Length: 233
Image 1 (cartoon, rainbow, N blue to C red):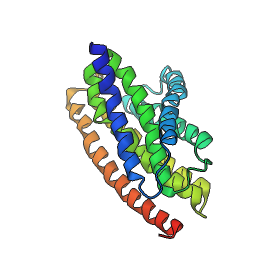
Image 2: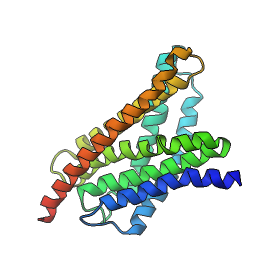
Image 3: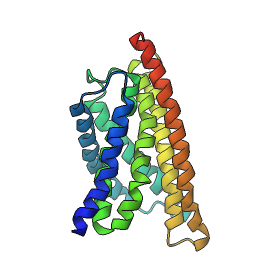
Image 4: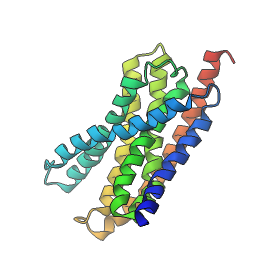
């Protein structure tokens, strides 16, 4: 019974957030099969991220614990995961006819990330239901936030006359920055090799998440304003 409860707690937050982002796409709503397809792509993107992450995790970055924590946070976790999510998006969705608004970049990238986070959370919840529940309110929405921010720039790249590469790079940079900062304070606060004096640092994930929510909200408003101009509304 606990396995079933754990599974539901791991999956439900991601499903609810998919529905939330679906409602945010109000001008030209995306077909449900595209949204849930993006969710499935996100789950698939866990595989290359985990494989590459395991390879690099087996390497000793540095004897200096701060350098090691930085590399684990910004490279093994943030860089590989965000690039993996972007890669499946770029291959399958970027040129799709249904990707026809800047806001769609936010919606699709957020939902791809929720598929990733859902799969990841199920793996964590199998061994520890408390960890899965905690992640449901932190890491799962976190993935949607930083990938959604990335998605704004991907949407701009798709329809702007500005440098496509520059905009995509900016989006990836911000997604990795948020993700890496979140993991860095979390890994620092929970690292057993450090003294208990550092444990409260993990609480910094809260302002990082709040800042991300505010940033994403601003970008959603900007993208909708751009889309209204594009659609002549």
